[in-house]
Amino acid sequence: MIKVLELIGDYFLFLWKVFSRPDKWKEFFKKLLFEINSMGIGSLLIVSIVAIAMGSVITIQTALQIESSWVPTWTVGFTVRTSVIMELCPTIISLLLVGNLGSRITSEIGSMRVTEQIDALEVIGLNSASYLVLPKVIASLIVNPILIIISIFFAIMGGYITVLLTGVVSGYDFIDGLTSFFRMYDVYYALTKTVVFAFVISTISSFYGYRIEGGALELGEANTRSIVVASFVILVLNLVITQIML
Image (cartoon, rainbow, N blue to C red):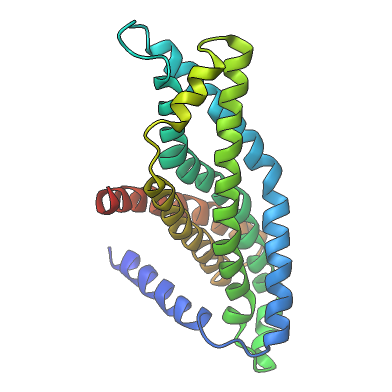
């Protein structure tokens, strides 16, 4: 328990160092643009594929569960839209990004720590935590919500294509369900979760990479630990945010 409290304390002290004024604004914006491009382009393909698969699966499962003639067929589209926007895309895609973006961040910063590049930055007077981590955090806060919006689009598109190919319900009924009882608050709820999860992914992954001691073996252990911890925190925060907002 004491070690857990020490770890939490180290994490918040690390955040204090990260969210300080950048030493060189020109370098900061240059690294920020690089991270936005790297995170966005690098994750777009896998996010799109997973979203299409999720939309297809949830469409088929929902259609198979609705067997009663008393249940209108547009319920399939309504259920798919609600599930995709409120839970599947914000949470599942964020967990996917833990493995994709989070592991990359941990490996990158951890490698710099192992090769003493971080020590070199501190020797020349730079705040290494802010210089290396802050662009990644801000880029994640910008990119992740965009990726989630794109994943919602592809998930719904995957469900619609599935309906057209399988005929479980008509395309008209599916679209009717998609547009029925729509609440913009659901989108706000999804994006709120996404921003919180993006912060968790970027900061926890950076934290474990930054504090690594040792070599390649310790780097692998830190990578695994960061993925496990970030995933656990996301699931806990998902419950907390749901209780607060819904």
